[in-house]
Length: 109
Image (tube, rainbow, N blue to C red; front, top):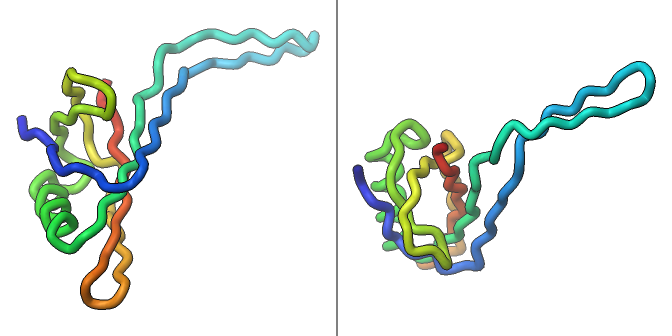
């Protein structure tokens, strides 16, 4: 399995959560049941034409969000299995020299 090792240049954001089943009864009582963890997600930003070109090549080689790959999240040492969350990748260009892109990696449980 391929490893994603392109370093982001912007502040990253992580999202964690739980899957909760909520049942509301006619009596007004609410019951909550834990269904386990939600997949974690990381929003990563990249800048520079060379880095974005590498990212685009990696994205295309994985067929966007189809194939999984390994990635080591910030502040962790163990790789996790992830995939691209979105089926498209949009970049912003500022003149001919500067470009940025933001992606979301989603953990595969």
